[in-house]
Image (tube, rainbow, N blue to C red; front, side, top):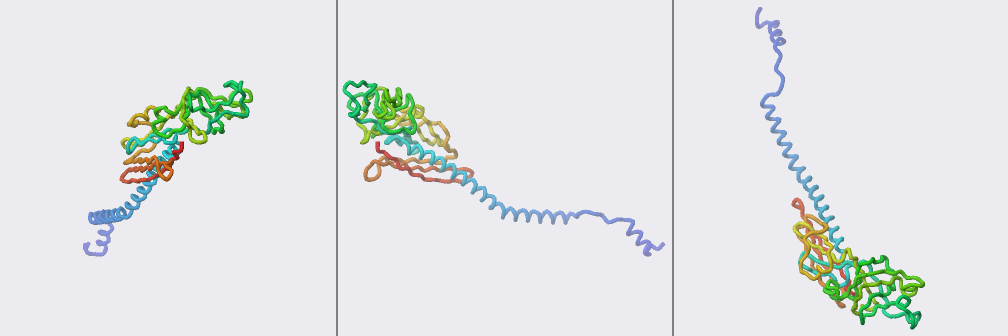
Length: 296
């Protein structure tokens, strides 16, 4: 049979099938194109994803810093007048108020009689001698407890820490018709360890301080802001605690500047706070100023 005849050509064509698959050149072209496409997508998508993550980090840092500053501001606003101490550039101390009110400054001349006893007379706070009890005239939103402290007329930070104008509560007596104090004399009578208090501010103002929270420090150590509860005697030193309850982490810097007297009357202080937080290359810095009422 002639090998060039149509029959031989058909037999040759159908007898041997063509190979299937990719050639090496095709594979190389696909790899190159895929790499170019991936690089292009990365170039456009990575900045967007990084920006999204950065916004999330900054938002979290801002929220943490704002929460910490507001937490400190709450304590500052309820501090005993003139009790804030700036121990260092990144540490301050204060005495938190539990409750406040007005005490009796003079006897009840309408109801007291010559023969009345301490259990039936009114009990004003006598600042000319040591006193162990006095009547509270104002309603208290929160009643102090035994072993809490009474502070009167704190005009200097050293006084409340040294104990010049504070005494510990020994007992609390509710007003009753036949007991002390009488219903008309006040809402509560406080019995305290004998103390000669200084002359109070006009109106007979006093404050109480919880024994469990005599004084509070805020201090930045390393990358952490701590809130530490301490005793009064720590106010006579120039050092800050190095631990406590964590208020904020990732702290890169914090600064506290206290001006004890600002304005025309010199009765208002200002505590300026700056808190900087940083994480994963992102950072935020917030400033917060708190006015302090230093009228004792």
